[in-house]
Length: 261
Image (cartoon, rainbow, N blue to C red; front, side):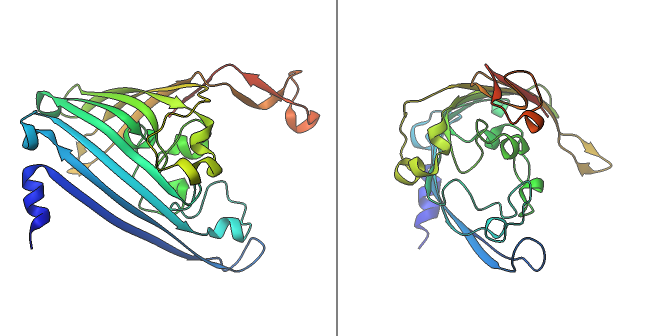
């Protein structure tokens, strides 16, 4: 009866979404299987401009619930990345966004603070395919032990400045805590806006973006780099400086990690 429209006009927008993926493995791996996985999203956005006249301010709260199984795991396909992007992070309820946002100069400056997934703001990429190789923020797909993508979030702050009609620069600081990506912890606490102990450092990404129109077609070009103060294992060398694949020794641990895209 138009109640959602009336609430929206007053500054309260509700969101409810459902996505599902059914996939069959015909050949490869260890067996032929069919697997289903899904994701429910539910949230609300409060527009403080409409509610209280606070221009450019809002608050968003979004929860995510995942269920189902994954073809890649159950058929032992051995792919480098998940073949169903809706699968992962414990298949449970997650607090995905719980954040305040403020905009200035008609949106030219944006600031967010709260619980955020890194890939929502930094190194964002469209998700038109199920395979994670072509879906979502790629750094998080590759180094997901400290770069945490949707649906998991951590405490963070992000600042984005549009330097022209087609360029922008942004930087952020994200808490790194292994508990956020621990499936057992997530099944019991993933829905809470808590601040668990065990923080190991911070992830600090910086991104420059260019969004031109070439021959009438929109384009998105991004150049970024990051520094993580959270320590991690070397993927190549052991503590004696020898290749891990040859020595089978203990990985060399770095005090921090870096990357670029």
